[in-house]
Every structure is written in C-alpha cells, then in structure tokens.
Amino acid sequence: EELERCHKAGARIIAYPEPDYPKLLREIASPPPVLTVLGDPQFLNKRSVAMVGARNASVNGCKFAQHIAAGLAEKGVVVISGLAKGIDAFAHRGSLKYGTVGVIAGGIDHIYPKENRELYALIPKNGAIVAELPIGTVPVGRNFPQRNRIISGIALGTLVIEASQGSGS
Image (cartoon, rainbow, N blue to C red; front, side, top):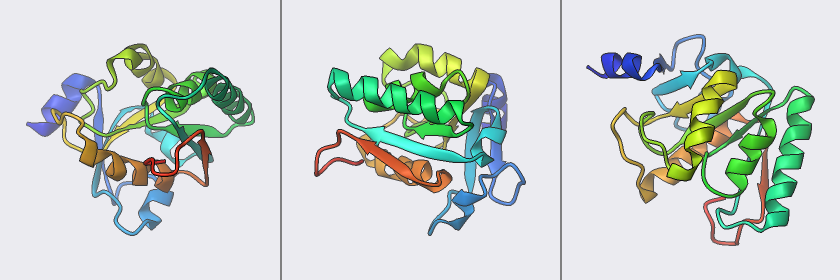
C-alpha cells in the first residue's frame, strides 16, 4: 500500500542498501532505513552544503541566504534545506535553477508550510524532496530534529543564517 501511494504521488522509496541512498547519510549515527524521494535522487549524492536558519528572518538575512545559495549552486554545489519559511525558502529559491534538495518533517504528500506550495512543485523538477516519515504523516514539532539530522547528514557542511541561540538550527 505504501509503495502504491508513493507511486501515485510520483515518489519512490530508497532503502539503505540501495545505490541511490545518500552515501554521506550512511555515515551518521542512526541513518534512516528508508527515504521517500520526490524528484531526482542523484541530487542526494552530489557535493552539497546545508543552509538553515530563522523562520522569521530579516529581509537582509533572506536576501543574503538567496545570494549565497545562488553562488554555491552556480559553482555546482547542491543546496540542501528544510523547506521551511524564512531562510530555508530563500536558500531553495537561490539554488533552484541549478538544483536543490528539500528535506521535510512529514510524509512526502504534506506541504508544510502551505506558503511554500510553489517551491514544493518546482524543486522535484530540478532537485529532490526527501522524507523519512511515511506518506500521510503530518509534520509535528518532534519530527523536525529528526529531519535536521538528514539535512546535515547529506551535506558536507552546514551554513546557519540568523538563528537564535535555542533554535533547531
């Protein structure tokens, strides 16, 4: 049933032993056994940097994130982020032309936040959206740290922009 629902959503499931499974993610302490991917899984094994930060970022912070992401992407670096409001969304926008990866905290069929609906539709055309949780799972707060380990686990490094001291970033 899960495979059928993924197929209907245009996604596929990649298990830990498969060649498309992210090589760097295999090296973290507890890699997810299964990922659901919407888009091109090859982006999960390209040279990449994570960009994360404040949801309620300043205008300057958002512009800076978009500028840095575009510069990295132009040099062939895939930008990975969490498809959240603020810094994440601007990082994806900046790198979208060259490829970006969005890692989400729910099932592959749940767009969160709703204002990123357009990004959610565009990213799989030149990148990938990744979910660890089963299709149908609604994003809840306790799933975001779990998502963050995937963001950092796929990337060679992480750039944090405008995050407060106690934030998930």
